[in-house]
Image (tube, rainbow, N blue to C red; front, side):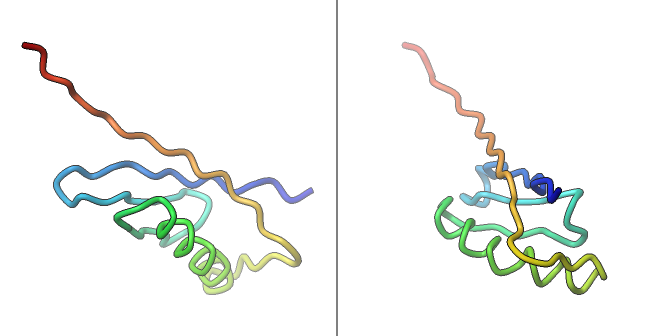
Length: 76
């Protein structure tokens, strides 16, 4: 069975971008201003990085993207 790869995306307030990393995909670090652009980059980078690391998979590659964004609201 091909278990989904775990990808984490965290919002970097200073950079104004989502930053994605993964322990399942060695070398994966990418960022994008929107989640849609981030997903597009991941769809390209994941198979490429797996192949470069000798971890190529046959068929479809599933991944789970977990995102986290901490926000603060000031009260008056």
